[in-house]
Amino acid sequence: MGFSIDLLPAKADNYIYLVSDVALGLAMVVDPSDANIVEEALYKKDLQLALILNTHHHSDHIAGNNKLQRDYGAPIIGPAKEKTMIENLSRGVEDGDVITFSDLRGHVIETPGHTSGSISYYFPDIKALFCGDTLFSLGCGRVFEGTAAQLWYSLLKLRALPDDTQIYAGHEYTAHNMPFALMLDSENAVLRDRANEVLRLREKGLPTLPVSLAKEKATNPFLRVDEPAFQKILAGAGLPTDADAAALFGALRMAKDRFKG
Ligand code: ZN
Ligand code: FE
Image (cartoon, rainbow, N blue to C red; front, side, top):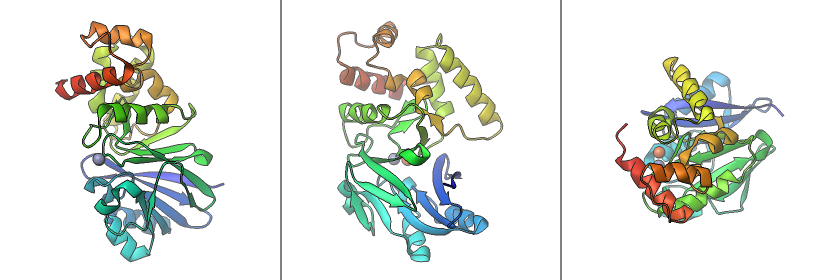
């Protein structure tokens, strides 16, 4: 199978992901915040757009939908629960639904918390997870519509995917997230390596994504609140010691919101 995934930087720090079947000359786009950027990439690579995917209704993930649909006639797939908030949605999908692009199958995972209808798409054949603003490298989305507990259970679903899953998140936030992660866990050798890698990449203006789930499980504080050893570290940073994982996650999310790195 000849598939490629391009990261198209858009707006201040968004990524639009373009997945293409090179042999067929077909592409699928995830969270097109800007139609012109997508059309330029399609033109350069001589691709037809076959499908538009949205992870959630925020405008920095859907703003290019209508123009792309008009110009290419591509259907728009997005969360059924956000049907009223995404114009011209062709198909609303729910947890467990499977979508297809070329001979790829994408599994829909409901991951509420950032918005109450947020979904992620997992494509096992190319080991790719498109998770919008639910999971970032070294961080996670802000809780805008759902609850912190909801977001925690959503992250648990993503954490259960295979370790070699590549995470394609909606924003380049890694360098922003890094000081908080390092403040908590400066002795973590995997995190220190990742921090050096992130600095090197950002100096060259290169993306820090995708990143493997294995690396995130070892470095992302928001994926680790149920680890006893990490709970000791959190207690040392003044977080509650008697809370269950979901409550501890909520406290950590609040601490991050207050943190001035
Ligand atoms: Zn968002
Ligand atoms: Fe966003």
